[in-house]
Length: 119
Image 1 (tube, one colour):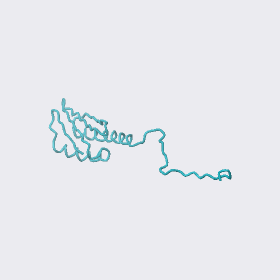
Image 2 (tube, helix red, strand yellow):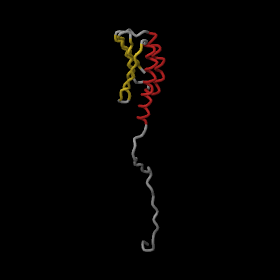
Image 3 (cartoon, rainbow, N blue to C red):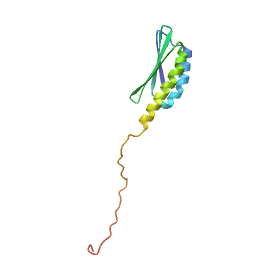
Image 4 (cartoon, rainbow, N blue to C red):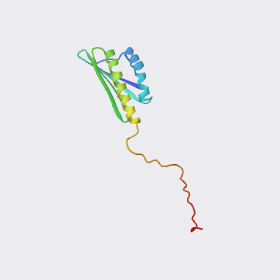
């Protein structure tokens, strides 16, 4: 899983990157290895707005949070994102409603009894 870091009016620190990578490891079981997470942090008036987005199976998953500390935001965003990813994966894995036509793979042999007239 790849993680992109985008900081708007904020430089993402190495310690925040390490913690993000550590906490996002549990998302791997829902998203797989090929998904790219985009982690955006915006600083406005001493408030950090954190956004985590990913495009998975044709759907966009997004979680947001605001707090005075980007580390606190991470504790809120990851569980929200995990819940959405779990819900999307189970919805995509479930079969659609409706009746499926299932036919036996081998043809069925029907035995007929010969009558005296057929002989």
